[in-house]
Amino acid sequence: MPIRGVINVPGDKSISHRALLISSLIPGENHISNLSTALDVDNTLKCLNYIGINSYTSKNEIIIKGSTFKCPSKPLNCGNSGTTIRLLSGLLGGLNIPAKLIGDESLSSRPMYRIIDPLASMGINISCDNGLSPIRISKSDKILDLNYKMNIPSAQVKSALLLAGVCSNRKITINEKYQSRNHTEIMLENIGHNIIIQDNRISFNPSNRQIENIHIDIPGDISSASFFIGAACMIPNSDIRINNILINDTRMGFIKVLKKMGAGVILHNKRNINGEQVGDIQVYYKPLYGVNIDEKDIPSIIDELPIIAIVATQAEGMTIISGAEELRYKESDRIKAITTNLKRMGVKVIDKKDGLMIEGPSILNKADIKSYDDHRIAMAFVIAGISSGNYNQIDNADCINSSFPQFTSLLKKIIK
Image 1 (cartoon, rainbow, N blue to C red):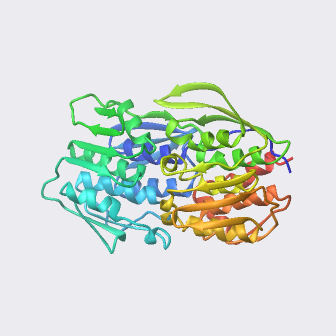
Image 2 (image 1 turned 180 degrees about the vertical axis):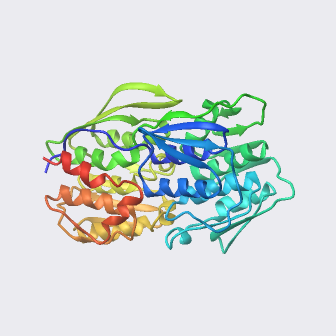
Image 3 (image 1 turned 90 degrees about the vertical axis):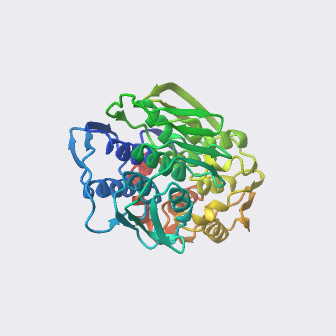
């Protein structure tokens, strides 16, 4: 079943979260169009509404009226969204607003010390139980400047700290080992905040600069598009084009890996919108080859590793993924999930502590797939089923709605 056609995907989820949160800090009306339709983003908006931020829709955009905060009278439910709970913790901690943040069963098993520790070192009164949610924020006596070295690349941690600095008017310096996605610093700088970036060192310095209201048209989500891109590059006779897509360099690791594997990828119509690089991506089938992916590659492909693993099953030779232990702490243990399901489909795969070894090319067999309630595992193995010429049975396809409700309808448009 080849993949052919021209489509657009919904707005980028990472940028959508940040546009909502940063808009909440700016007095007056902030305009956001093409907001992600993901349930995770809706959770962020609902949390903001509950702490006093008003919003309404007009035509094809959402308008956020910022800087009208109030203390929540009940816990803020972040659902399945790690981005919501971590970034909102930085924002509320910096604003010195007491709150309790909770999530669903999956989110409640994900590590939170990575934001608790640096925020606490700023003097923010924040705590959790055994490194897990719920997160509790109480009134702080004094919030301090922060100079922080990140041992684990994480755009969520970086963004939480930057938001805490903006909200508390304190200087924040973050040193990254490897650059993670940089949407927060781009957005803050684009509206007038004093952000200094030098190599992998990011600084926020309080200033008296005039801060502009946000007016943003969010480009298509490259992580959502990755499933269609992966399908097109590994299924013979495929050729698709995805228009108005984010091509920020910190999110292009997936495309770089595919090119290294020999995939046919062409970028068209490159342009800059609100500080972000946007373009159109054409992807077509070519024979693929196994590659080595190591620690320095991981930050820019962390969300795309499930679909990369599927693509690797159709590549000649061995694909080795290392330095990706962070995959074990996502919505599921994705290393375990990928390995278990690939074996069910007949693939030779080895589960390593920090990654995977996948031998290709493999004949994929239709299988019953365990999603582990993880949207990216579910979508990756839908694509694996199509590559096999059949459809896999996914035990919980509804979890896809947390990030990409239009996945199935768009996929049906391009299956020929």
